[in-house]
Amino acid sequence: MRDIAERLRAWHSAGEPYAVATVTRVSGSAPRGPGAALAVRQDGSAVGSVSGGCVEASVYELCLRALAEGVPLRERFGYSDTDAFAVGLTCGGELEILVQPVGRAGPAAEAGDITPLLGTVLARIAAGLPVALARVTEGPDRLLGLGLVVTPEGRLGGFPSWSTALGDAVEAGARALLQAGRTDVFTLTPDGRACPGDVPGTVTVLVETWAPPPRMLVFGAVDFAAAVVSAGRFLGYHVTVCDARPVFATTARFPDAHEVVVDWPHRYLDAQSSVLDGRTALCVLTHDAKFDVPLLLMALRLPLGYVGAMGSRRTHADRLSRLRAAGLGPAELARLRSPIGLDLGARTPEETAISVAAEIIALRSGGSCLPLSDGSGAIHRVPGRAGASRGGLHAPPAVVPLPVPVQA
Image 1 (tube, one colour):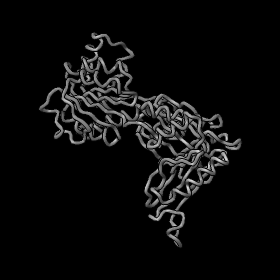
Image 2 (cartoon, rainbow, N blue to C red):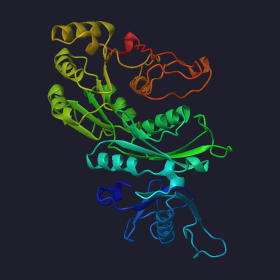
Image 3 (cartoon, rainbow, N blue to C red):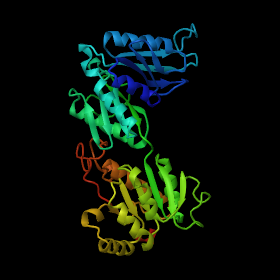
């Protein structure tokens, strides 16, 4: 929907009814993926595309019908063995479409009226703010089209008819996809448990996200940094390497980095501070006080999601002493993850990078870092609710540093 957001916002602001058709599922060869959208205004004007032309006319008619009836509609289009030019995809794939009226929902579709939620989503897209819209695309009729808006700060809106368990599970899944900057589909039981999509009575949810990739800032062009950069890119971060030494900070040494910057770390962070957010991960790998202290003094006062610093326990103790002397208080120092990473027994740069990535994932999702085989009950939790266990599986997150020999 991002491609047509500007036009939709104009229609929405003017109070003009329209219908949005969204691709919710794709199988086989299909021209567009989940989230592709076509919108039709009450006067018949249209914007967007769901198939690149194969089924546009039929979807257009579905939008007009949804506007007239005021109810969400669902339809599947696929290849016809008997007539390749019938209403279907000539490329041989299948796609499923959800059509929802906006600004004109009948009484029977009160739960599926996404008008207020879509207004919030469109406003955040226009402002360049991350947001996710989750909608039920398959399930009981009373839930079809039911929506929920999620931001990095929490749930902004949703319908009262969401059950607590299902609503929490949808929020958790939407927030995870928002953090990754991905649009995707998942399936839940009515009580919020993850399950395969072919189980009777399940609820399928489409989550559309609008967000730039989260940032990972790696300070220190050391040998461990290349592996951390690769792990960060694999997790979907936009990764920047920064070092004040031009001989080390080169694209040749860090081919997986999106950008390599030659600058003093604290100066670069200051220049970027206005565009960083709670999804940002900052890894300080220099373990050199002249770089670390000015950088961490600034970083620990910013609303970043993760701040980790490499170094032995002796280096960490010295660093804490310098940061206290510079004016940081206990609450600010408690945000520092150092020595960086989880205790996986890592020795090589690649193993260390995995331990750092694991700590970042655990911190943002509230994981306990315990083996799943040691617990029982559900294995998923609501991100951002540290220690919120289900079925007694996990205790609050416990951060265990890497062994001393790994970090100088």
